[in-house]
Structures are given as C-alpha cells and as structure tokens.
Image 1: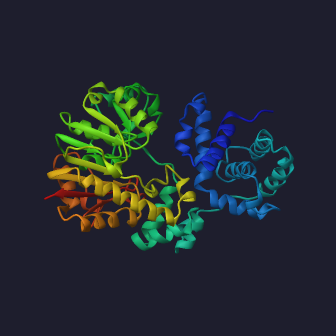
Image 2: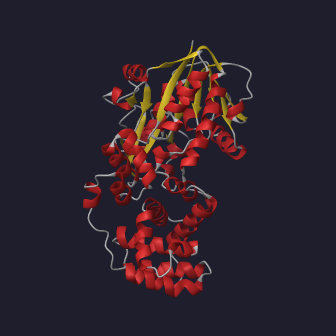
Image 3: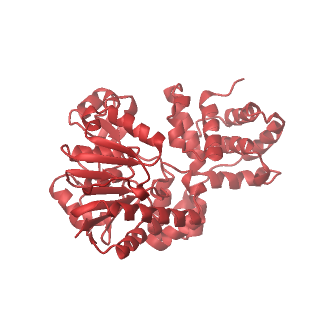
Length: 448
C-alpha cells in the first residue's frame, strides 16, 4: 500500500530541512509539491510545522520507548517516528493505526526496510501516550519549565526571560507554537472586494490601515494575489517599511524577497529606488516580482552586490538596512530556526550587521534618514549594533520611534491604539505574543 501524498511530502521536506538547512515554508510552496491537492497540502503543512515546533518534546518521548539512543538512529528513522508521534498526540482525527502504518511504510520507502520492525515496536509503545493537559504550559514558572512545556532550547528562553521578563517569554513561546495569522497588504483599494468575491474572509489588520488578516480561504489562489494587488506581509514588516516615510532617492540595502521594497515604492510613487541583493538567485526572484508590476520595474534598479560594500556612488535621502538576522522573531513561521541557531551565530551575525549598517550610513545624504531593522529578538543584533555604529560615526543622531509612530497615527496609517507600546526606549520593538505580529526591531537614524 503506497504512502499517502501528504505524508510522503512531509517526510521529504523534513529530511531536506535537516540535510540542507532549508526552510520548510519555502519547500512547502516549491514546485516539487505544487501538485498536492488542497487537503493534502494542508495536512503536509500541519505535519511539517507541527514536527518542527514540537521536536524536542517528540524526541524526549521517543527516547523513552527506543532501545537505542536517538543519536544512533538514522535520520530517516527518527523523522518517521516524529511524524507518527506528532499525529498520535496532536491530530486526534487521524487513527493511530494509520499513522503507525504509514510511518513504517515511509521507512521502507527510504530504503531502510530492515528498520521497519524497530519503528513498528517503538510506535506501539508510544501509542499509549496522550498529549496531556495544558496545565504544565499554563503553570510554567521558570525558563526551564517554559523550555520543556513549549519545546524551545533553554538558552533562548533564558535570554528572553532576562531581556523581556518571564511573562513575556511565556507569551513568546506560546505564540511560537501556534499557527500564525496570514497578513496581507492591500496595494489597491479595489482588491478587497475582489478577494471577498473569491470566497476569502478578511478582517482589518490590528496595526495598519492597509493591512488585512486572512480568516478563511487561501489568499494565494486569488486573482488579486496573482496580479499583485495584494501581497502577503506580516504587519510588523509593513510597519518597518512605513517608517521610511517619503523620499525621492531611496536605497534598500538587503531587498529580497521584495515585500518591503514594494511597500516603499507604493508609499513613494515618484521615487527612484535602488534595491541591493547579495545572492544572484534571490535577485532574480526580486526581478521576477517586479516584472509582474511594470510601473515599479521601470523605476526600481536591482543591483546584485554585498551590502557590506555597497557599490553605489550617489547618496540617498532614505535608506533601509533590513539586515540578515537570526529570525528569532519569526519562529512561529520558521520553527526550524530554533533547532539550528547557536550563540556563536549571534556573534557572527552582529559583525555582519555592523558592517552592513556602517556601509549603509555612508550612503545617506545630509538631512536624510536610515532605518535599521531586523526580525530578531536578540540585543546583539539590534541595540548593540546601532549603538556601536553610532559610536563610530558621530554624523548621525537617533530619532525617537515614538514620534515617528505618532506621525503615522496622525496620518491614519497606523491604527494601533497605543503607539508607545510598540516601542522600547527610542526603538521600535514588537514582541510575538505580546503584540499581534512577528517580532521586529527598528531604529531611525538621521544624518545631521
């Protein structure tokens, strides 16, 4: 009996995430799996994201039933066990016998037939497990308890508890284990009615007037999405783009995949925009995105280059340095990050981010502004980068983000009732779970 398409896809994606350090969300929407039916794609997504979110909890349970240390198991075997156990514990509508049988078949499909009896035996032991109540999550009163209850690396939870407090760390962890809301930005007012007519249920965004949240339906199947009248973009990401304000010459230093670039273009319809991207394949994707919007492609120049050494001679009145980062503010969407990130990575990212910011500052015209942003919760990638750059360049001053958010509020672009709550000191700081969006950081620097 063949393995179901959804489970086969989930197994293949999880294997690639481990072997290639790929991102599950990108693989789920790749051409390799575009032929999955809508129900199969939904199940594959549930399985992949569920296993990645709860990996440490799953492994702890598997270890109790396995006669071999998990470190000795082939990855194909471990993934098959994780898939079945996730279904046992979180997908009650799927009969355990079906989940068990298909995981055994997945092992055979992966040419590990000799391990099939072992997988069958382990899963039979695990079939008696139940997920248990959420009391442990509700009552978690220490970083250790949070890390266990919500399946997070302890070192990350300890950092968040120190930096934001235990209550906020609890909210972050809880949010990361949930399915995140899909937010879109409407690029044309008529798009909303078109989307409704195609059976998609929307509600107003919580931060921005131009944002909507998808309550039901697949926005990617709509004509408005395909023709670029609506783009998927988290509201915190939209807010960072709105902080740019208005300019005539604008530089986007790390542009791909292009959501912020398009948002900046929409806010500045007469501006000339230079979009820089390091990786040629991502620059091609950015070019493809812009080609679907002819009015933008004519005034947005794409440059493939390293933002640490920007190859542009002119200066700009507005610059966005949305630096590559750890992504710890997006773990609900990218749960694999928490299992591959290390403390050493943060130190390396800090040096790269500092180099990008320093390079970008050199491109700002007198009186111009630079927005430095990340989707990280980690201080080394945010405040420390900005403070170090300013200590080395005394021609800039930091503006208070509260005043910038008040400006957006007065212009009716920001709809969040308490702009000050989106800030920490002079910085923009959104926290997943505390705020209804991903975790983003931004600083506004002005050349004096």
